[in-house]
Length: 259
Image 1 (spheres, rainbow, N blue to C red):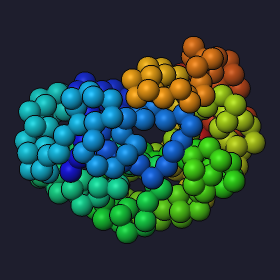
Image 2 (cartoon, rainbow, N blue to C red):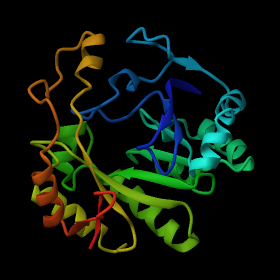
Image 3 (cartoon, one colour):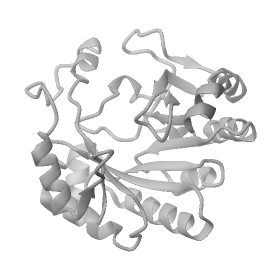
């Protein structure tokens, strides 16, 4: 498998303290991509970071198991991100089997923009899937990411129904609040309607972070469309959109959940 980064002590990629593995290659081209260095498939290192490497599932699992004590004391585990981790489904599954045989929970962050069979390979092998739902309208989705959302929505239905039937894996829907794009009442309202058949399913709204500009510069790219932003949405606007979408804030975590 090909990875382009490995980050320890992550706290935003699932519960507890996690080690996040970033797998290289993605079928989408989101305008707001946070990891442009991981978009292309293959072993190239476009940012000359020295982090891109090819590694076997067994060797990667050994490296990740070195963090076992942090996972066990915090309720954490390993998260596969990207890029699009399901694009390397076979290697992901092999690594996950080793980790879970050692009691390490495994999560996957995915756009679901992959052939259904790739998703199906992972369903029995991971504990949590964090699934992006960026845009409800397929035309908007294609304009913003390079592809329509029909495959994504179909995969999400499969995932949610499988989880409901089997009680596994846990599923969380996630929507990034990108100013001028996804962060509208119309978009969030349509995503809410799509999620209505699964009222038990958590839905998180993610604050947008424009700090990827430095990555675009390291790649020699001048097309980052958010250079004018210094932060994501102001908290009052994020709260207003969440309430309009029927979500209510948790008084402790300040995250939003279905009402």
